[in-house]
Image 1 (cartoon, helix red, strand yellow):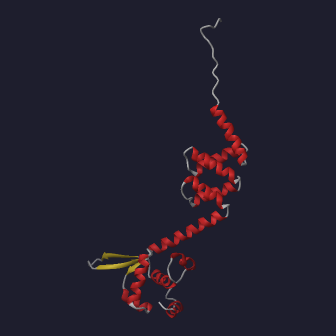
Image 2 (spheres, one colour):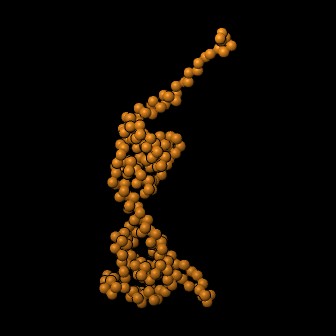
Image 3 (cartoon, helix red, strand yellow):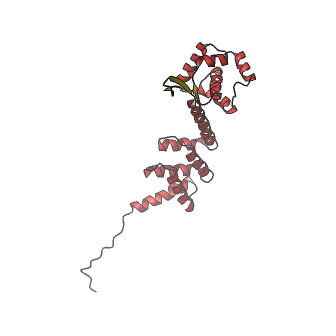
Length: 219
């Protein structure tokens, strides 16, 4: 698709290009021509009968170029060609670009997660992900952002370690730990260590049993 053809299509309003798609298309690893071809397909509907000749005529492109775009975008998993039989039993092909929409949404969601992470010291997210052994979702990130407005990073990490030590990698479980610590006035890493040390001492200290000889009781 040559530059003049692109200009002509836009001038004739043959293709509608949503700003959102235009801002994200470079992340799809496709050329501008492939992107414009996808926009042409989008304007035809989510699925429509694949007619290379008709597409060639509407875009003023050769059949070879049309098939090349279809092949490239299929390989990049941005569209599908589905085969089916119509009511007359004739085999037809339909183009489905739902994969394109799914990919764009995935990119947008990833960007939102990244933006959320950047609002707080990024080290806290990487530390928690390391403890959990997995990446955090957007809901968990919102919880952590709320914690960061109240607790020191060190306190949050200590709560995460405490949860993992107990075999739990749940944000809500950690939230309960932080809630209990907050009630006890624990605000710093030093407070946490002091509290846990005292707690461990209480657990390790043997219970003193009063040795009383009932049989020798004179009373």
